[in-house]
Length: 252
Image (cartoon, rainbow, N blue to C red; front, side, top):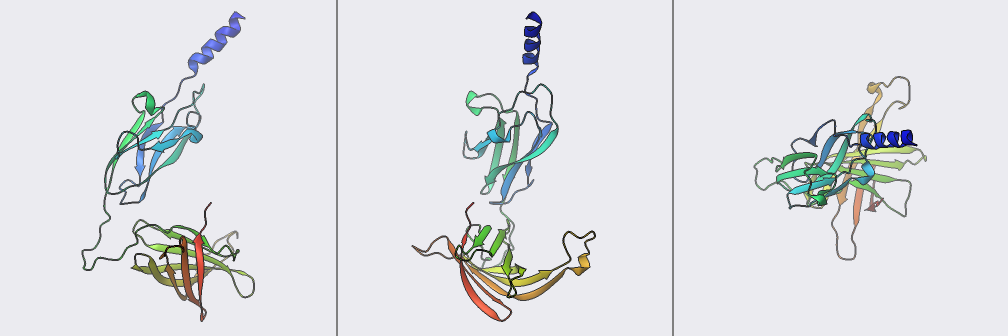
């Protein structure tokens, strides 16, 4: 009995939280206005528990608090790199601190600071048109399942779309939307390209077989009116056919 108790006490004494393997850093290192900012940490895979991580703005409008309680481990786990999304911020200076429990006022075990700067723009008049929000997401028509439009809007507000459809023969086709510009804060116009290439799972991928051909034009109109919200109008001309589809951003 004494031996068993001694072993238990020895194990309990060894159960201590291990520190992160290296200091945290901000990704991207120099974020621009409303670009998604991550805290990149190298952690012990046993100590770190992703399910318990929470992000808030405790302690001030320019101070981000990450609550990441650490497990107690007898032996260290393998090192892992994790990205924790902090959010998107207006221009300014910010600090971030990582705590086991910020409510107990103990000092953070990781901290960093970062500056968010306005994205440089060419000084021209009138200034270039830019959208007021991001339209990144998967868009579709719920009444026409089987095709959709995946949009990605970068920090510079450049828009790229991957449009997946079925052709007249019932076979899947892929198009991309790119090379466009914003003609208003809610309207984008660009080109449509058809892309074909070699079998993706072949033993050797030959990039020379990738063909990108101009296929038409597209317009995305995100303007909303009362009672007709959360939808967009997708107008395209491809293969001599012009059509307009009403699409909405998929929530999942």
